[in-house]
Amino acid sequence: MKLVIAIIKPFKLDDVREALTEVGVTGMTVSEVKGFGRQKGQTEIYRGAEYSTNMVPKIKIEVVCATDIASRVVEAIQASANTNAIGDGKIFVLDVGQAVRIRTGETDQSAL
Image (cartoon, rainbow, N blue to C red; front, top):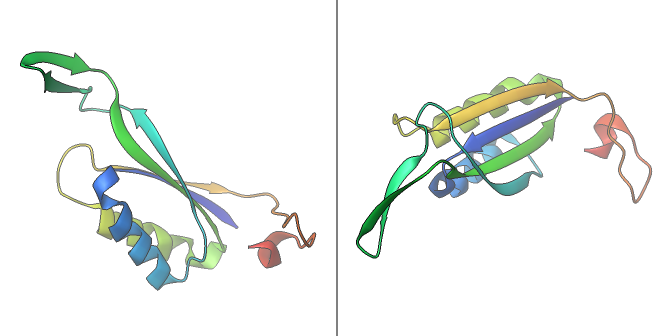
């Protein structure tokens, strides 16, 4: 099993969710997060005054999937979240040692 973590622009969430549904993903966790990368924050105007913020709002998506579809999950996220602009985000893929469904006690692949 793999854990795919994607940090994307907030307005791309619906596109990514639809793309993941088409690949066969049945569940995901979504969090509102803030951070910065190469773009180093942003400048905004509030009540006529310009100020800069170090943290940019992003969406963090976490998906646990079978190892054999992890590459398709990554491709779906990359294709649907891409705007060809700086700050599009990152995708990380990690190994999952074990998964347990709390209600039934099912483990690993059957727990997904």
